[in-house]
Image 1 (cartoon, rainbow, N blue to C red):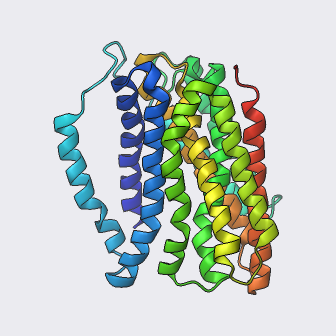
Image 2 (image 1 turned 120 degrees about the vertical axis):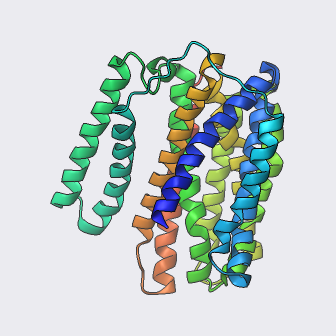
Image 3 (image 1 turned 90 degrees about the horizontal axis):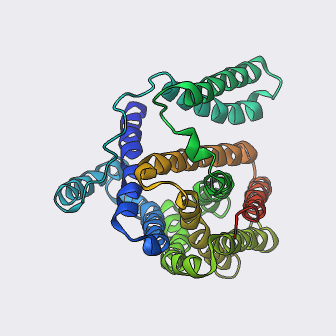
Length: 353
């Protein structure tokens, strides 16, 4: 299972940056925010369909079917893509790849995520935690050194020095960590604390991502007229309002319609405004011939944020023995997610108008 997931991750690493690069090349600059909004809306739609469809398949067919369902979709997309997509590339880019920087950066990310979990389980002064953290820092230093000295770096440092890319990266790291830390544990909260079935939990979460899919496209139009800073700040604050609502209104007793659902609508709205426009602002000053590389950098930050957000949330929740104790731990994980959203809103104020 783990080996197959590694292979699947390689496919995702090839797919996501290339898809964004193709989209940016295919649209006019004035339509870029709307296009990225639609791209983000598809992510929201997938997040709505995935858990629900997965729950149905697990209940009716079996757990292996949640992997098989991807196969016909991949075949159809590969066939359509080969016929319909217009290629875009940089004819001057080197075909050489820095074979040392890639594993150094990837291992550093993995070790830092491990440290978050290990620090909670073993203690922050445990030799394993401290030793792995030191190793992660060494590997990160190797990656940075190679990126600034190698004649053909895996990621151009000039992209990271763009103010919009750097601030967008910080915002993406915080926003996605907060959202993912909440989203991944939401089904577990509903099943373990409120006693929902897997299928019911999947259906209960679906309205949030659906709202995201609806508002992401219009958010792109608003960003074109009013600016990214305003749209992302509003998105982060609305997502923070969702966290505040849940912390105040929810307890260990199930209360979906009055307690959970309004927060879902707020969260979906906030993520629909924030998530795609953080990608847009990160790419706004990237040169056209570097779209794919910039998208790869943005995707890497997003994947790191997902891993960090999940690791922190899991470390906070732990394995409580009672439903009441579990609720308190989940609430603390929500508060941390809210802190991430607040930092995103603050960071956006550093963007140029």
